[in-house]
Length: 293
Image (cartoon, rainbow, N blue to C red; front, top):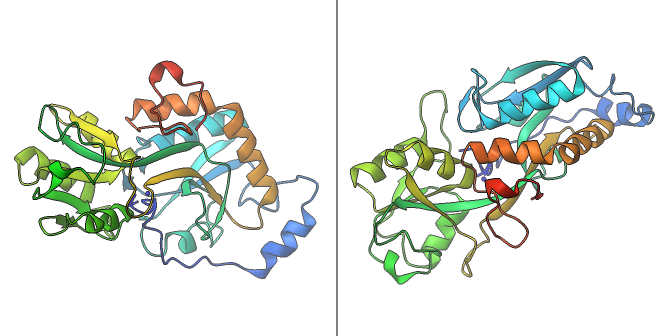
């Protein structure tokens, strides 16, 4: 949902091979007691696999919401926090988690088989971004006739591109690259800048990116989660954390942390503008952060 088509960004992890070694299975069998010393690179350190320049998710200055959740978990675990940074594109899982250089990917789509997922800690969707007060800020689905003939920005290869094609919207679309080196480029930032300049009429971004950049824009942009699609794939996803397939006790500990700290996690996400959805596809507001995704 990185590149956040897949991380997605989230869908940008597609095609990456996970490096699995036979010792993982043996270690899992030895580790039934709950001891994390075998599963983790260093049981005294929370080692996170992260992108060095991929806001709003993470950066090497600790400014992303995944950084903030990492700080929260490190405090709860009473561990030192450390990162293994690598651009989240082809090879990310293999080079980081798969190579035992870190122990958790903080944002991982439910159902992705590149790693083992924890329980989800938020639910969100791709979103339509428009200028406030435009004739498109009341559009809630890509099937809306008001989008016909409009120039719409879309990250190539992401799920909503299929929905756009199904609704005849690709003829005037402006594509932005999915697989990029985030140290130098940002498709989301480029799309928002083009919208501000009037080069496109609307854009479609993965929810966390849409909310973050819309909030930063001056004036702020309008964000509509695309939860009403009937053509093409559903654009709503659950996001958890990714661990190695053998790391069962570590996964259970992370699940416990998510459950115990959901209110604090929701607050962090909402502070970054992430459009959080409940199970009925309704937005979770700041005053209702006690709800779980």
